[in-house]
Length: 185
Image 1: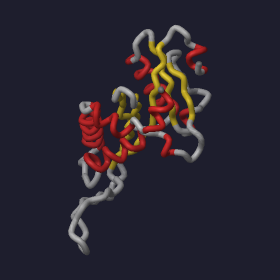
Image 2 (image 1 turned 30 degrees about the vertical axis):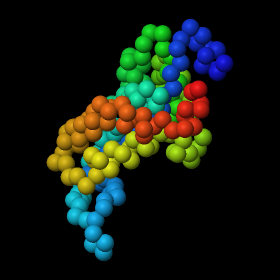
Image 3 (image 1 turned 135 degrees about the vertical axis):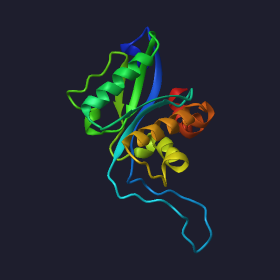
């Protein structure tokens, strides 16, 4: 019996992974197939405007939850957790695995009663399946783009996330790694 099961014996425990990604005008380039010896065409922008996708996924089911927020801070993480907690069933308790960002462990962070945060060891991004989602979204939707303003960036982030979660099989294929399967079995 896990610690979460002991602490919440009447609740169904669900395993979620959480992370944030910055998306904006100074985007990263991605891999593109092109002719040998030539560079593929791509757009470049010199402005500094961005936003953040706060995302959480449940690899076993392919469920996902995200908010697009203007900054990363304890305040926005508290907002994300509060909104996420509202989506959980009354008999469910979420164990959320996340990295060691400062706003994840801040004393001012308000964690809802139906969520338990579990930090990953330092320097282990490969242990968070959500990192694979950010790579996928950048490859397919969010690279080599120039957006006119922050609202267009927000719309692009929302469209990309909605396209991903509409295909639960894709989300599961990105996140349901063999070691995650062993952990929940």
